[in-house]
Image (cartoon, rainbow, N blue to C red):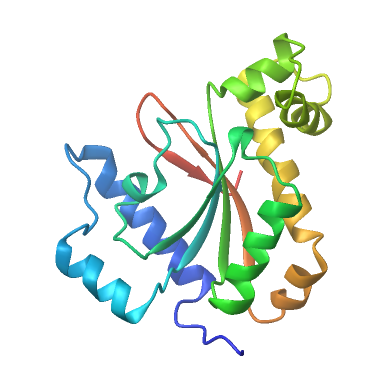
Length: 190
């Protein structure tokens, strides 16, 4: 299947920026979640304009942060916004089959997974996440800098994918961003 590219990476990034600007002063979610919208997307399928790889933190809600409607964003959530083969497969699917031209790794400040990687030595499956974050941040102890390094590491892993590299010739962009919990602002291209 050859996807159609309805929204360029630049157009998608502008939509995200505009949506975040709306969110900054909103009191309720700005996206269309109406029964009509649900019925439309059920009948006509999803047509997302961006992939958002983000943390599972309950305070980080991409659809709200970007004032998006149902079907607008292809969201992949995992603690610490780390990338493994499962997330990478989802990203590749979105780029190849849905024709999405913008992939955003959205980290956030005050991330519990980053804090655990810096200050703790967890056991069990959590260790898979913190080990990946430690690889990304090295010896960094500053929360903000570590969160940015972690985002950058995930961006790099996505960019190294063979499928993503082949899609780049079609205008695909992969960028990092950081969501600030206190005020809701998204800093793009960190």
